[in-house]
Length: 277
Image (cartoon, rainbow, N blue to C red; front, side, top):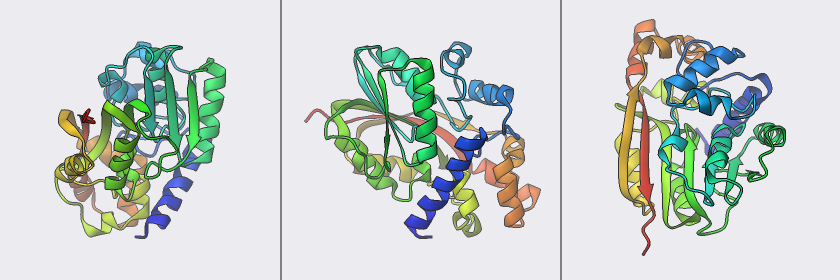
């Protein structure tokens, strides 16, 4: 698949999500439009009740696969950059931690998501947040600008992950920290999944192996790369996910093959540091 075709399909898919309150990425039975299920998903992947209650309604679309903010050890006054900020969920959590003297910048390539994030920021009174249109492979951010970069189940959607990490390295200050939650593979996907645009939007086809992911970070220059945690999603949940079901239907996958696919995918939380020299 060509990169531009992938980006177009992903952008269109997430535009629909922004407009419909529906999740396509969370590995759980249908949560589309159901706020209680989105809340439950978020708790299962690492968010606390107090965090979920502290952000504007409509910011949490149930699209993540972890809670990078909880592991980023944010400090008052820091500048945080969120790669693929969506409706602003993680940005608002980060903004609460860095305070008025800090700043959070969200970058997303989907205008509909940016509109939603900006409206959520307005409703919540988040003056220390800013949302910019851009691709995470070409960040609209100056060199050595951010203290911390976070990302939640987004880098797997980028066709050129090595370029994403090179850009992240560029915009981080020396000594800056990277904390990512993302989907990675424990084994290679079948070709029919790799070549499925529907699977790409559903965070499946774009995922690479854990080893490739870590190597891409290290090749970009990051050091102290550390896997903080891994979560294998229950097969029955992935098998019942609306997007996974659609992928299985389109590709004529049996339920057993769909479950095997679920066992191939894990959520990984990984941290790294940009060296000072």
